[in-house]
Image 1 (cartoon, helix red, strand yellow):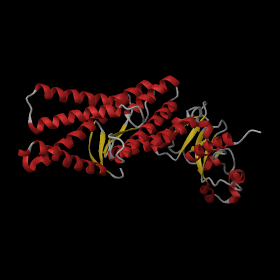
Image 2 (tube, one colour):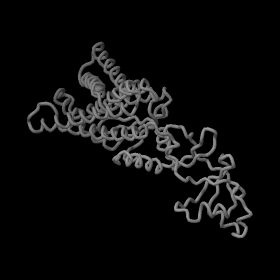
Image 3 (spheres, helix red, strand yellow):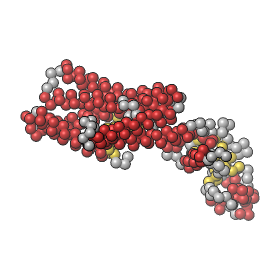
Image 4 (cartoon, helix red, strand yellow):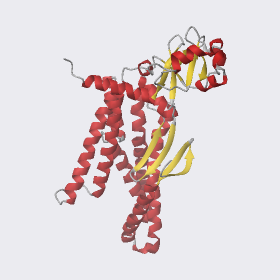
Length: 377
């Protein structure tokens, strides 16, 4: 992963640390070490060690928060690609979306619940044990941070957990996931602008609330919420469409009973699309193999009338297959998750409808956008 360092794994989930994490680790170590030095002068030169311990415990808390999301996702059968710690906290990268609003809700609230449980446990330890000195101070700090982590993440706007809760609620009410994403992303953008505004007003001496970190966090929220908004727009455009809608026009499909001469005349010569490989189908339209255009070079042109495509074809290659009725949004997710260049689309009866690529989906969206923009006279 670019810019990230792998540091281990748990439950099969790889952990990464972004290089920005080391900056915030050093900053917390130094800053809290200074606080401990003032509070406990007898600690001497080892205060930085206590500061480092506090910083590491804070990031353990963030890791536990993300593991909460990951554990619930795994219980739902959702793969977790990784957990990454970076300057603004942590991120659990899930392999796919939850299938229902209720499942999305529980994935979202799992992290804050873990943080609240940690807050409760650390507070109980403080109350019930005779701890004192820097250890008690660190436990108090970590307890407070876990409470703040839970409450901040529950703010209702993407990309925060509260935004995912809001998304699940709107999804449940409207029955449309993209509407939940769109609504929660707008809320996230509003939170971002509020954070930036408070930070700027504080720097100008107008408001006692906010600082440079408020600006940075606000900017982070604004940027990520905008990405969610763009994703929601794409989801809306794809809503109601199926794989059949995005099949490439004039897909490279050729009947196996054609002679090579007929194949060359009808599909290769004068064809503006230079396909190098064609799907071969039988009389019923079922995919039975493939033929390379270059393979014709091995047959004398005088014999092209006597050799059929099926005689020269190769076995079917291992290509992902989807049903023509499969929602196009699911197809897009499949292409992205498996990094596939193309898919074969089959009709309900199993016959081959055509080829689908990312470019054909983009072309479909462009055509639909152009059609909406064209005024009706």
